[in-house]
Image 1 (tube, one colour):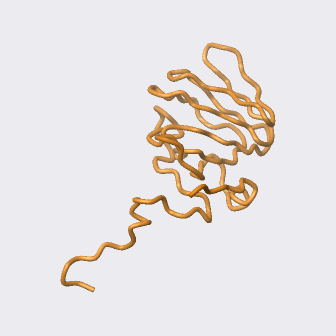
Image 2 (cartoon, rainbow, N blue to C red; image 1 turned 180 degrees about the vertical axis):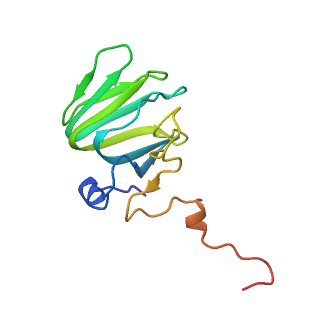
Length: 143
């Protein structure tokens, strides 16, 4: 079944910052939404590229040693694997990310803002075959 996702409705449920929410899956990738504000942390993704699409606001991607990339609404950038980068949101930014499901939002950096297992956005049904879709486990002989 083809499922559409209303991004405005999903964003309405996101109240925190720098914590991507999964809204869809594509092959081995996840489509994630996040609200950003302020500066994140310098990091890199060693094994995969990162696709960053700004829906609202202005996002500056700082790179070492290259120049900054400034993204506005409707603009997309691909951060190459291994590139040291620092996302800086100018005001509140709404972002759409497409990443392999194994990618951590802070890449090689561990810390308070690390989201090892991104949560689904509110209202998203569990994926077929996921533990949530299977429901509680029952053992033989137990209710």
